[in-house]
Image 1 (cartoon, rainbow, N blue to C red):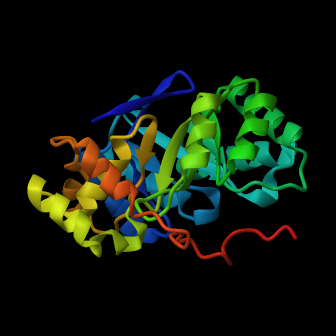
Image 2 (image 1 turned 90 degrees about the horizontal axis):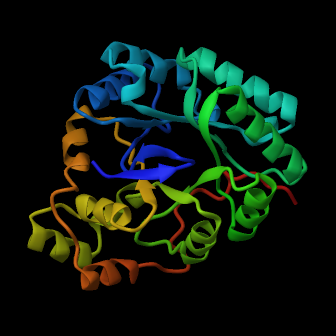
Length: 273
């Protein structure tokens, strides 16, 4: 398993996304993931599944220092006191005494960025989380936030897959000394459609999904968090570290990006206008 160094700690380059899983399905897939060797799980307060994720972690019975847990604070709780409370409630729901990574889920221009960064860094100083970061931040927001955080931000989690170029954001993250975690890394299954991914997969004896995930984690400072509700898919999604894409193949996959490649529902994102 490849690891990235984020905020001075190791983060597995492949993690289990849990949106929108809940209940027994969520508990079972988290347990199965840890039992089968996965060591990175991603959740969020907004997902309303932190209790289920925590139950799955406990059911797996793995030592706390053997896995990496990320959760996030929603955009309506970015006032400093609310952020502290959100983190405290997340820890309670997960049944943990600390997080590995705590992220601002969506930017909120109604709360001064300086106050947001001060609250994040306080959580790290309190030991409630080992690393801090953001999600869905633009390149300009990354530059501002990292400057205000004194270089302490470790990650920006954004939608990233072969159909969506994140070149501008990646450049900003590289300059800021931050990693990118790709959510929706298989574009809700759309990576099975292009013939180019099919052909590359045939050359390596891999599926289109495995090729897309390999393309992501083969990039410098990029992690991916594919979601699955089927424990049977965990082994397939994890089997991406026994082959390597050529430079030409990497370029071919990157060339699939298009202006309308974003898959997230625009109605889901907060509207601050």
